[in-house]
Amino acid sequence: MANYIEEYCARIRRGGARAIADKPVMVDQDGTYTMAYVPFEHRNAGARLVLVSTTPGHTHVRLAASVTEELLLAHTPGRSIQRENKRRVELGGRLVRPNLIRMLDHFRVPELIGQPHAAALWNDGFDAIQPLALLPHATTRRGLAFDGPLDELLDVPMLRTVFESLFLARLGQCHRRALYIGLGRTAWAGLRHAAGLGLIDRSQMLGMMPVPARAGSMVRYFLREISAHDLSPNDPVRHRIAWLDAAHAEMEAGVRRVRAATGPANHPDRLIA
Image (cartoon, rainbow, N blue to C red; front, side, top):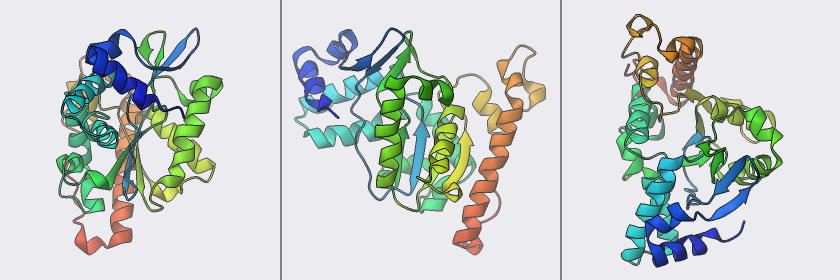
C-alpha cells in the first residue's frame, strides 16, 4: 500500500483539518465508488477481540482529520497518530461508541478477554481489541457511505481488491484465538466468507450486532430495552425484527459457548440484558 499517511499529514499541516474535507487523500475511484484514506492502519498484535465493521463513515473522516490536526500540533510521531486514530476515531463518534459499549456490556463480552467493562476497551484495555473494517478506506457509493451487501462488494473489482488485501490478508496477523464480532449484516457476511476460506475458525465467531451508528429504535430493540409492541406502526425496525432476534440469540449462544470453554465457574451464566 502507498504511504498515504505522509500526504494526509502534509495536507493537514498546510490547511488544517478542513483541508481533508476540501480535498481528501484519494485511494481510488470510479464513476460510482470512491475510497479516501483515513489513518486506521494500527494493529494491536495481541488483541483477543476483533470488532469488524464495513467501512468508516463521513463522521469518522471528519473526526480523524480533527484528531490528527490536534496530534500534529502537539508534535506527535506518526505511529502514535495512527494508534490514537484507531483508539479514538475508528468506531468512535457521539452515537457509535456509546451504542457499541452498551451492546458489548449487554452480553458481558469484555469479561471474555479479561476486561471489566466495555468502556475499558478504549482506555487501559485498548491493546486487547482490534477494530477492523472490510473496507478500511472510507468508501462511498454515489456520495453516501457504502452500506451494500457483501455480494456487491465482491462484484466491484476496486472494492474486492481492497477487501482481499487489507482485510482478508490481515486476518493472519490477528491472534490465533481471537474472537470476532460483526457489526451489521455485511460485516458478518465478510467474516463468514473469511471462515469459508479457512482464514479463521467458525468457533472464533461470537456473532453479529447491529451497526452501532443506527439511530432510532434498532439498538434499543436489540438490547431488549423495548419490545415489538413499543414500535410505532411505521418504524422500519418492524421489518428487521426477525434478523435482530436471530442475531441476539446467536450472540447469547456464542458468549455462553466461550464461557463454557474457558471455565463456567468463573463466569456467571446471567447476561446483562
